[in-house]
Image 1 (cartoon, rainbow, N blue to C red):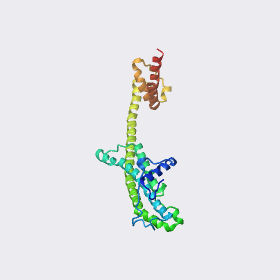
Image 2 (image 1 turned 45 degrees about the vertical axis):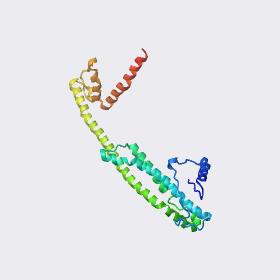
Image 3 (image 1 turned 60 degrees about the horizontal axis):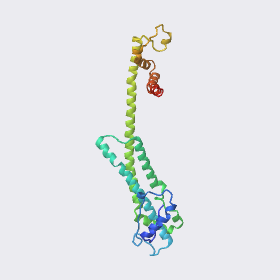
Image 4 (image 1 turned 30 degrees about the vertical axis):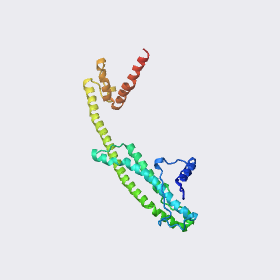
Length: 269
């Protein structure tokens, strides 16, 4: 919310803010607060007298409150833009996107949140319902908005949002391309491993005279016995016979079973 004081000194404004402090819910950070003032005696604010009636004061107060609310959003948007200012410069120097998917998503979420607050969540673009009933005071309200450049500032903010949206669209596309390249390398590695596994199966058949596939159960070949010196080849032959299950068995033996046995041996000594 906004506090509008009419004809008050600075000490009176601070006293009013302190009195309202305990009743605030989710107050803005100090760096996000904004203060503004308007000269009610200028020609830009045509009041009827030096002591204007209540509804004229309300019309000026509504316009000033919307301007202050917009100013607070401008401060937050300026900090958000400052965080993305180095991204195009870094891309020009390195030719790469140094941000992760998570960072880009968080920055996009912050931008969309600010854009919704400017255009949807707040009443900056709306005429207060009070002037539907008291329409004779709406021209004064519109005149104050024009004096405070509210509509022009909203237009400038939306133009900045469009530029940031273009930047985030480009970053998202680059990150998708990078992710696609990684998946392509995974496929290439898998395709390169497959011939190696097949070659080991052929080596297993020819050197150790072990049949391949389902013929192993029906073959008359003699079983091959492995002594301790050929133990390292057993894991490789597992890869050759069963590429997937052999890989899982190899990982379980070396990452789970052997470390657990080593720890158990150390504990029971």
